[in-house]
Length: 265
Ligand code: SF4
Image (cartoon, rainbow, N blue to C red; front, side, top):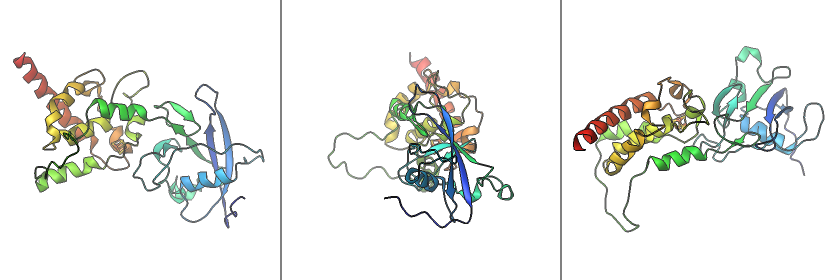
């Protein structure tokens, strides 16, 4: 049974790029959604899932998208909204576009597209596995030896906690990679999300055990030398992570690592 239609004073139109399979051609479909106060893009997609009919009255399939936490923590619902990469859960309809433009009202649709830097699964759903593979490749974790009680870890100063905390807020959403001119499907560039996690774990007292191995990866193909420092990663990051500072730090660490390696043979 369909859920009851919400009381609407206005209608939002969403123009959504649809693609049934990775190898299929895409199409655009428009949906009208009754406007309610404080709607986000996910709530629009939920309405469309319950009422998969386009504005011209054609019955279609529900739009496929990825989401989980709905509070900008899981990073799953990244997509292009009006051409800008961001999280659908924190994209409030009332704040999209210029307030005076009436963005989203009939005649001026809100456009939704999948990220273009990751393989498409279907509609707005992409596969971010490359990001997670690169986190593994760069050993972005604190190594532990077994599952037994290791006792308390080394104490960290408040200064170090303050430096690490902003970096730990990364949600692996991929916004920084989508916006990066260096990150393409044809190369192995790891991008800002990985540089920030390399810094986070290299300055962790226990994580530093793997610092040399991480820097080997950073000096490899797709590593720090391939960054053009365009800075888009900072502009689009929903967590305001200072990615350019991470890039500078990892760059310095990699140079010192290379010099040490040169003299140690
Ligand atoms: Fe997302 Fe920011 Fe992490 Fe990049 S650095 S994956 S934009 S949270």
